[in-house]
Each structure stands twice: as C-alpha cells, then as structure tokens.
Image (tube, rainbow, N blue to C red; front, side, top):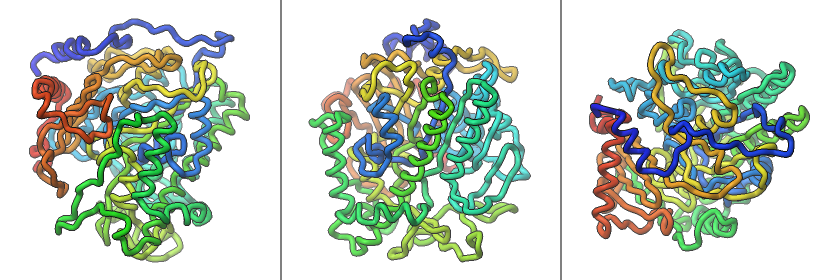
Amino acid sequence: MKDSAIFKVFVLTSTVALPFHLGCKTEKPKTADEDDYARPNIILIMADDLGYSDLRCFGGEIDTPNLDRLARQGLRFTQFYNATRSCPTRASLLSGLYPHQAGIGHMTEDRGFPSYSGELHASTPTIAEVLKEAGYLTMMTGKWHVTMNIWPEDPDENRPLNRGFDRYFGTLPGHGSFYDPVGLMKGNQFVEPEGDFYYTDAISEYSVKFIREAVEKDEPFFLYVAHLAPHYPLHAREEVIEKYLDTYAEGWDELRKTRYGRLIDKGLIEPSWKLSGRDSMSYSDGGQMLYPWEQDTLKSWQAHRMAVFAAMVDHMDQGTGMIIDELEASGKLENTVIIFLSDNGASSEGHLYRTVERLGTPWKSRFHPDTTRDGRKVKPGVWPGVPLGGPETYGSYGANWANASNTPFRLHKSWVHEGGISTPFIVHWPAGIRVENEIRNQAGHVIDIFPTILELTGANFPDRFNGSKTIPLEGISLVPHFNSNNTEERVLFWEHQGNKAIRKGKWKLVMEYDGEWNRTGPSVGRWELYNMETDRTETQNLADKHPDIVKELEREWNLWSEYAGVVPWDQISNY
C-alpha cells in the first residue's frame, strides 16, 4: 500500500472507539485502597497447542484446579483469539502487532521477504523492552521461538536477554524432548538438563525462583511463562498419566459430546450453535485421518495417547499452582495481574511412524535425540500399539483427539477457522477486578495484550526504537472490559500459510488454502461467510446468501494484507 495511513484511518472508522490508538486514557478500575492499584505485577502464562475446551473451567475433564481457581476468582473471555501457530502468536504477543509486521509471517525461517524474515524485527520493541524502561524487572521462562538462531554458534541479538528480559530460563526452538530439550538456556548460556529433569516442572520451578528474586528486590515485575506443554512430543511422568488411564475409554466422539454439553451449561457457548462435524482431513494415500471411534482397532492405545496429553496439561496446572502459592506467600497475589491463554488451537499433527521434523545442525542432528540421557534408544514418531509418554518416545496424539480438544469448533492449529484460532483466556487480578467468576464476550486478540499491559502499568510505547519509527500497536486495551461486559465491534485479521480470515463484528469471512494439506470439500479454496452470533461453530456457510458482505469483507482483508505485508502463499512456499 502506498500510504499506510490510509489503512489506519480505514480500520479506525470500521470500529467503535479504540481508546489506545486515539490517545484517550480509559479510566482505570478503582479499589478501596487506591495504592493497591499502583504498578501491578504482570504474569503471562501461555500454553502450547492447548485446545479451547481442554481446561475444566472451559468444559474439559482434565484436572486443572489452579487455572480453574483463577477463572473462578477472575474472568473468562469466551471469544479470544491467537495468531493460529506458535511463533506467529508469540511474535504478536511480544510486539503488539500482527505477526507479519513483526517479521514472522510464517515460521522462524527466512522466506525472502521482510514480513517472513523468521526473526523478530529489531525495530519492533517487545513488551519486555518497554516495561524494563518503565522500571519493571522483566523475566521469562520457557519457549522463545521468535528467532531462527537457536544454536550456540548463531548470532544472539534476538535472544531473550537481548530483547528486554533481565532473567531467562528456557528453550529457543519450537519443540523438543521434555526430558532432554534442545536449545536449553539459563541466561545467555546453553546448558544441559540435570537430575530428574522434566521441562514443564523446570519452567515452573524457575518461575517461582524469579518471583522470589523480584520480591527480594522489592521491584514490580513482569514474568512471561511460555510453556511448551502440551505440544508434542507427548511426555509426562507416569504417576500423572495414571490419573487418566480410564478417562478416555469411551473415545473422542463421546468426549466431544460431553464437552459440548458442559460448554453450554457453563454459558461459554450458545445452545443454538451446533457441534461442528467430523473433519475431512486425509493422508496422502487418501486414508481418512478422522473417523468414528467405533472403527478404531486399538482403542486402549488411543485412550492412552489422550491420557498422556491430559497429564501434560495437569503438570502445567500444577506449576500454575506453585506460582499462585508463591504469590500468596509473598503477599503479591492481590496486585498481580495473571493472564492465561494458548498460542493456537490443538494440533492435528500425526507423526505416523518416523514423520517427525528433523533439523540437521553441527550441534545436534535433530530435535529428538538419538538416545535418552541414560542411553536408551529413542523411537521417534507414532507407532500404533506403542505407548507414548516416556523419554524413549517422541510422538503426538493425532487429529481425532485434537478435534475433541477443540470442541465445539472446526479444524486445528495452522487453520484460521475457529478451532485453530480460539483460545481459553483467563484474567485474574483481585486488586483491580471487582467481580468474580464472570464471563466476557468481548472479542479479543493476542495483539490486545501489549496495549492492555501498557494501560495497567502506565508504561509508554516509544515513537522510535533502535533508530527507526515504530509501527503503532494494533490492538486495544482490554482494561475497560474487566469490570463491564459491554462489547465493542472489532475488525480482526488472520493469514497463515494461505489460510485467511477477517472478523468484523458478527461477520467472519474465512478461506482455507487450496493447494496442500490433503483437504477435500466444496469450500476449500473459496470464501466462507459465517454469522458469529448465531453460528460460531461455522456450520452454516452464508456466502451465497450475502455476496455483498463477502465482497466488502474481502476488500477489507485485501487492504489489510497489503498494509501488513502478507505475500501470497504460493510465492512463500516455493521460495
């Protein structure tokens, strides 16, 4: 677009008041003691590949008492969105921009265009860099995944300590063993796991350690807890897996029905929204990835796969409990804002046999090690009948269980139908939120987290950074919605590997890329139109009934895509 200001005006006139962009300061919620509100601590907890209904407080059956407590004492947003994949969402969270604007329009690979550089742009300030300037102690634990430079010999300018964080413990790449992770760092040093190591537990332990350090320094703090769980490989401790060995014996179809009913009972979805149908994904040989439970011949093994997934979520919740306990013990829980979300919907990646990503390097030959730390051979992939969970395995739970995790929505991680972009979203802040256990229906997006934190902390977003003019933040502050269920119309956009969507108010226009992924159906490669008020599960395509709305929303998406730097996927995938 020749003049990006044209698009900014266009977006603002397409929505109701956006106080952050317009420079209007929304009044902060008050408490009995005004001092309680000053400079709250901020904790962001992000899960990886968690489905919309996996948490108990969002209709699931997994034992998540600590996240449930945050929801019960705080807020649940029912219509919150991510950027459909791990590193794009993380780039948006850190930058407050759409992922293409931040340099990660696809993954952490250089695809030859600035929007697809595979690196978080140096001219884009992160939340940590802005809060550090405002006097916050900035800390991070867990998965980074916004740089391609993940090996010791690589340039280090885009690693956490060089992007605003004072403390860091975690991994740089997008996945790895929970028992022997690749790219594990403490500060700026690469380290090897020691002792009885399990990554989710280590993230939680370091989170508690960092909180204690901040309390000792008596400084306000920002902590970003970026879990790898429950991303594959399915790894969990046996005693936690055992809790769920009988939970999934009735299979994925019954699980979807049960969760659907709970979502309605909890008021998280409308009873009029139909449960979406079984997806039509297929293997390259034409075999269907998703099929009725009664057709499966290895039911016990399949149930065990889901049990391991549930155990991974359980581990993550236990770690959240450790963080809550530390905040309570130090007297910091009252004035700490805790936000929880997932980076994308549940993953349909199947990894049958040895189909697990490999990455050749001089340091480690692949993401999955050849042997465990005690010398046993690792058998990567999903092997029917071979249980997952231990360090000698490296597999996933497949499309059928992912479909259940994303109940009641369609499709999965990487797609921009609701199953790929919808996340459970929890906000807990006793000092500033005057209500408990309430639901918010305001549409939100990961781009909103940065402006929300600025509103909470009083930090200022710079006009220039590293010698360049900054791109204005794209989201809105959610603070006005903490104590009110009033909603404002939004215009939100998505694009990921050719899948694209726009949501404007109640209307969502979405298209699934036609060219790969072995997908079938009359709508693949064509615009679909859905009314999010009456059919958020995307079961009734209204494109033929409202061609004028399709045309207008397509025009708006095209304007945004030019402004944001989106490049047609066939040019990216063939680069």
